[in-house]
Length: 223
Image 1 (cartoon, rainbow, N blue to C red):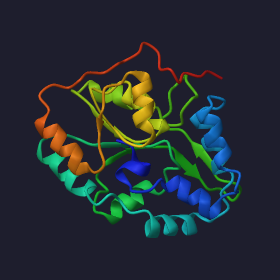
Image 2: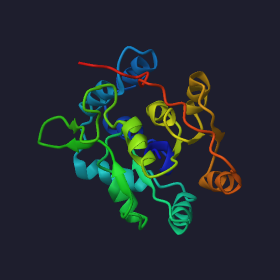
Image 3: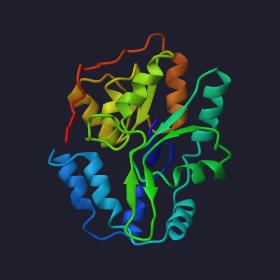
Image 4: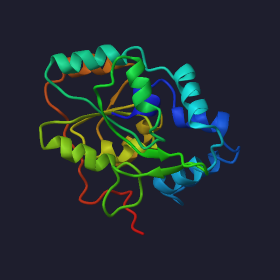
């Protein structure tokens, strides 16, 4: 599942940009929405706009960006049933594990970008990017495809960066921007508001809708 706006109640990267970034940061999201720029390039441009110290920004995230209160019980339910849960994020990454640790969930697997603070403007490393495609920082398609080697995959998300994971998952839960994106892509999905909704739907689900799985991800970009 996604982290910013999904497991976490807020889009942490957006809150950090509002508090510590240049006011021009929304234009890069708008360019992504218009198809003029990939998520990876937009993330690079936005990361460079942050002027807070790592300590200041992390303290802000821990104070203002709590997990969804229904998320920890959902994790326990998944694990009790023998499932596993991976967080896949195309955000700035550095705040995810501290937020999880604060909630006693530091054991969860996290696939994200890595923010580098070396004295200049922050930069992003892409340890979980696609080996060829440069559209996204973290390739959620690949994360889902790897997980599907072990069994059916449920994907939970809410935004633009979740589109490419949702296309390849067996069961999709969508809210906010991902609802219209999924409809446009022909992805069957269940609406959700809290993780209690996700759990109740999964408990009553007889058969996964199945993945759309296009041969090539529609976000594909090469250098």
